[in-house]
Image (cartoon, rainbow, N blue to C red; front, side, top):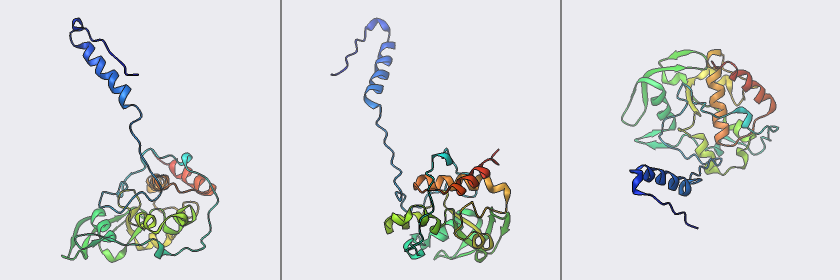
Length: 229
């Protein structure tokens, strides 16, 4: 039944404001519906929330589902198509190198030729783009073991090229190869000062994509988050 509000002239306009506020509550409550379905993130050219800094947001490791690691049966990197075109001749790798570097120079077809990059995993500064890898914060194989095996190829492509979440970082070849497809229970950045941010970013990505974590992974993440100031 419609709500009626009696506004008397003697209230000198205050009742009008009250009436409007009440009407807003009555008609607008519950109107915000946000979905974060796994794989909902399509490749974009937006700024990575991590981008070498924070990006943990309010995601909580305690909100993640703890489960045993899934099987690697059927896995291949080809099921996570990357690097895809991002426009202007650039692919996802090029975009991350441009975003994470300083004084980055590139050819007209987006071949990165020079710049300066800071690798937060091992606290190194690099000037050769060939000395860099683009790391997936949550590795593709780790995602497969924690839920991505059930995704569509399109969802996996979105994950592998996600420039919006703190999922892609330009880091040194050595640190990326050392990490491989390991989760924090078996590999942590040698730069302890980055542990807080690393754990926040890992939790943010797993939360958005609704990926599970193992108990050992949760313990390691909790230990890393304890270093946050």
